[in-house]
Image (tube, rainbow over all chains, first blue to last red; front, side, top):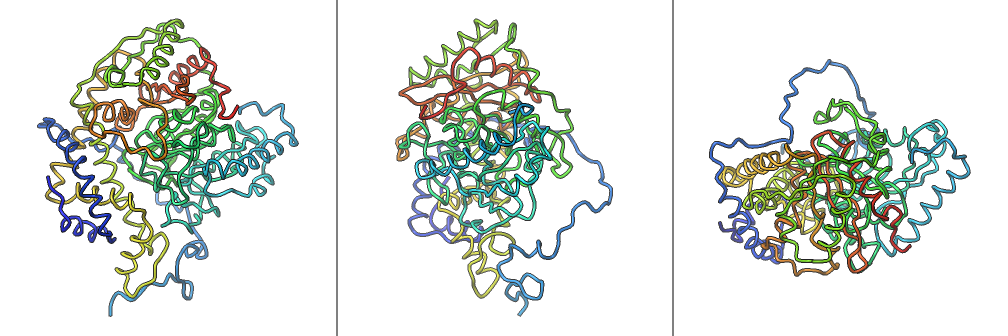
Length: 96
Length: 471
């Protein structure tokens, strides 16, 4: 497995953040150890094994009653917003 | 805790103010608290909860527990101004039981770490030696209980994040069964591995805390309908005939002879109490794969869970011209370097070309590890091993060989209980170089009662109950 600078920057862009040159180099250095650990993982024969998603595989397929259980006020809803205008959360225009 | 009938208001108020002042006094030394909570509002309603099991008990919450009107940062710059508009279910339960919240404790950023060196407010120090780590990610809670500031603190445990710092800081650390305690209102890390639990200064307090915290919550779809036991009633000190399996893979890979000596002495005492103890060996290849399996699952799930921390949905916003630029700048500015690295690894595991060979492979290996563990546990009541191969590392320790069997197996075996979801507890087992070391016990799912009794019996055989750093 390899993880070069270009690939790391593609991943970072996908994650919506930027990395400094030093951080990219750190990741490459650390990936050397990680890739050896991942080789251990990949060397295990998992043919015919299903993925384990949660500790207990008990289905919860019931439907809830359509009841109002939690209502928040407008004041609460916007209390953590960075910018507010006329009782609405304000973000930059998406459609130009 | 649980002995409220004799307490008058004056004693309770003094206890709370003493704890608060103690926490303030040790803040410079330990750096364990993110936010001190003005508890006066809680005192106004205190008498309503006089019959509560935690009446007047000052407590601390890990800072990933949402508290209405109180800043909840998860030790991340991204959330440094976030003030929740609701209480996590466990906060409501604790308040109803009469507990008084005096602070929010430091943690590794977003709970993604095992050192507590990555908190936005700086590293947390070990109460036994401030040159050493508290461990993480629930390091602030562990440090404060280990110091004796509070007798109970909440933590969360995704990959030993309660049990390891408990061992390093000389306190009891309980991670109950997956689904036993509601996670509603806890800022998530990795949804298939996250558990809520507690630190206490003795096992009886852990039992009482669990009675308060456990139970079905319709607001958390992963919470269990399993009835909640009166866990304190299990604490008989009788473990005659109980079968304990020692994980030989772990003890064989520990090089510190003093840690092993403490462990062997603990085991001898349990045998004297009538426990039947045998060594078991799990498939070595699977044991070596614990850490990479965890690393992939946890980071992949975290990458998805924290996609909403973008400066618009949640978190500090850095102003810019477009929504996309706001998100990029906010996430670049808001997350520490370690978190961004972990997200890169998570994203790498989730990339289409890697998903099958990495993320899904990890989920399959998780099943194999759980099946291997179950093979052992079916013939035993408990599984046991030292909680760590060493004492708490120095703050600047960078010498660990991350490919050694000691690191991969002995230092990370407790992650198995996050894979299985089984209840697991670490309790003090002695001192090495004047630092506490811990022993870890794990039981069958929802068998917290017997697990606590084993830990309680261990405590009775040793004199670590009143252990507090500095005393």
